[in-house]
Amino acid sequence: MHKIALALAGITALAAAGAASAQDKPTVALIPGLTTDAFYITMHKGAQAAADELGIELIYQGGPEFNPTVQVPVLQAVTARQPDVILIAPTDKQQLIAPLRQAHDAGVQIITVDTFIDDGKYQDGEGEGDFPLSYVASDNVQGGRMAGEALAKAVGGEGKVYVSNVKPGISTTDQREEGFKEAMQAFPGIEVLETQFNDDDANKAAAQLQAVFARNPDLVGVFGANLFSAIGAADGVKALGKSGEIRVVAFDTPTRIVDDIKSGLIDMAIAQHPYDIGYEGVKAAAAVIDGQQIEPSIGTGFTVMDASNIDQPEVRERIYSE
Ligand code: T6T
Image 1 (cartoon, rainbow, N blue to C red):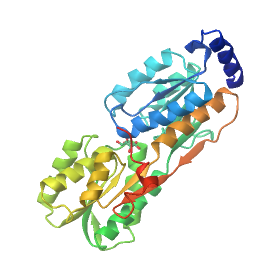
Image 2 (image 1 turned 30 degrees about the vertical axis):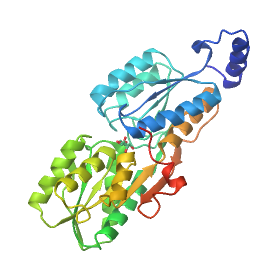
Image 3 (image 1 turned 90 degrees about the horizontal axis):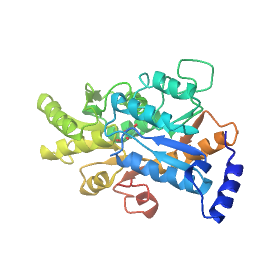
Image 4 (image 1 turned 135 degrees about the vertical axis):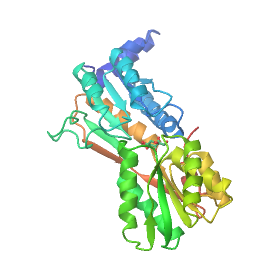
């Protein structure tokens, strides 16, 4: 296994001779949930920044959909390239356990970013999915609670709301829903309707919003539990002409969500810090390559965006890259 210091020394020498090659560097692969998502595009930038600083070769490879059937072949192709460490956002808590174990058994160290497998508690000697070395991510239960409190406040503690979510089995969005529902227990005047699953398709989420409203004309709010759920929920509210009447709270902050905060369509959005997840992920991978022990869980923060702070530079710098 490479030692970063040695690799760096080697790279310096080769660069001086004008012949540095990718094989001389330790290699880390980042496999996102899907490639066309501003959240993972931003994570890639953070990962690349850390890789450049630490003299690591970064491979970035993913699929076009947030789906284990699409992600597993990508994982197998990346494993065949034998990187030292794979950083991956597993698209399902259970379905990625066996494929990741195969990669691990082939000698690749695993760190999960954003999402986890199994119970997300790694290296504690328990469970089928205990082998990843670390989980680098937002606190998604806490983010869900924050969203719940914000929506409860926006609707004045009363009326019908629901969660627009991706699909069951994804650690992040499951936890956000859990946190949201936990927060709602403090508001007896709010009824949480059945969750609508949109398969990460904003058009489906928009159609579902309109269908839920057709069944519940007294609908007052919706929580979009990720980027596509939130965009779709907001689109649905807009199509009904109910902006400001059906209140929207969003997870994730591409520019489109920020525009909707400005127009009043969305009340509040929770920005994750995907750049930091990518950066910290590669830093942790570098430490592993260097033979160091790392923490089994590495947390990154949130920035809450609403009309009151959306023009502040330190808030705007958390808008995702597209
Ligand atoms: O919300 C993020 C990510 O945290 C989640 O795991 C999947 O959806 C996003 O990528 C946003 O689309």
